[in-house]
Length: 586
Picture 1 (cartoon, rainbow, N blue to C red):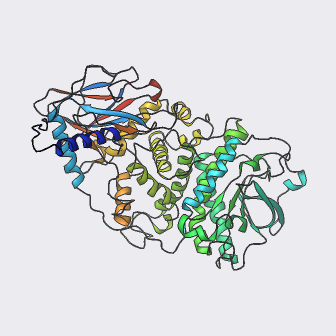
Picture 2 (tube, helix red, strand yellow):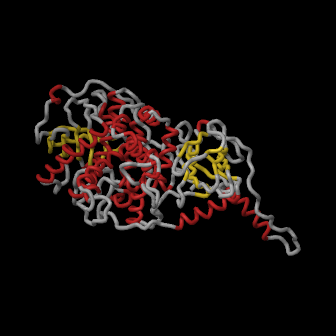
Picture 3 (cartoon, rainbow, N blue to C red):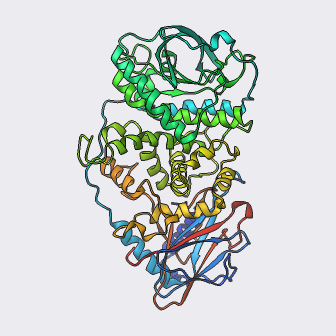
């Protein structure tokens, strides 16, 4: 929820205290409640009275300096979503008011919102609980933060690459030296020697010769390499296109080294997770950069069952956690190489690239979901996902819930890959998933080669203004799968296709809630538009969810979306209202 103005709350408290502390002879009385708010008509676009049929939506543009909207009444109910769909301002909360001058509408809405919040959809079943396994989590994100901050500042240095003798296909068991970024805070690289342990059609899998003992056996290693080479690589490249090939070997190198394990202190493993893998932008540079391996490289932890380097990682744990990380980082590698190396554009610094990387993880899950429709391949027949999907679902499953719990404070347009946090990542996954559903799988590939500004890319690929996309997405998060109604009740533009996000969130609640982090089956909270001037706040690139119920006796009801005091917003914020007419009973 947006935050109330501290000044307004304190002011009310002071007034109440003054009345309560009067002397015994004081005849002052508390005044009656204020009457309805009055405000001058200053219509956004379109002007006049907005009339929607049931289960339809529209976008109301307030960049014309408008602050008011009049809606048809006669008992109609509306979902109202204020938005600032922009990346043209700093990421700083903007104060606003959203009010109606109709006391009857405010009272009716407040009672319906209270009733709506009192109903919790029952969660049934639980997804496959994975216990005793460490997950990358915050440790991975913090490491990525440093990497992407460096990549954003790094100037690509094209130039001569490795000599012709090193372009010959390597032989299984041969060794090669690599420089591995072992501490990004101090920009420290360490040279290691690694042996080619798996030679595939798409992947060269190297393992550091100093890897701890008791790692892969021959069968495990063959199956591990085959998974990355024949399944995961194809999942990523089919969706996002091919990476560059600066070493002309037609392969991506996967390097497993205990130096990556050591990036996480053992004391931090259980609390913040661990660094699972990464790619280094400097590897794309030519031979003039002494740190460059002049190749496309994915770095990963290596099995260490006894925890001799840091966290203990069994072969089974590696098989569960590294495939999703590989898909995530391979999307970043493809995006960087296509934007910078191939097309000579700026680095894709937008947080939207993180949303695409989470899509890459999700595609791993979808691969196994399609192979194992329910109830097959599940420890518990009630599971939403098969057991084989569990290593791929963490980011979109959990992070999207965290976003939906804070849609007014989490910007989808002003975060970037160099920042920590999970909720904005979940929001950007929702945006990318929505666009992939609406415009087809080629949308993801197109995002690899468009302008570095992700919003410009979206508008160019879809042919639809970003403001319209934000309005439709904001509505879809609530209207897709309205309780008790056919999913097609909402227009196609206000629905997802490949995911039912209400179902995802309800399953997370059934598995992990109620808790402080998962308090409700439906994380999106809708608030009542009141007849007062309470000050709220919302971040640029964010949305807030409100409801307006009109009395049957009112032909029209007006609302005002404005700065505190009633003024219009800066046009740089692109202020707008997404409006959906709710079906009866919602």
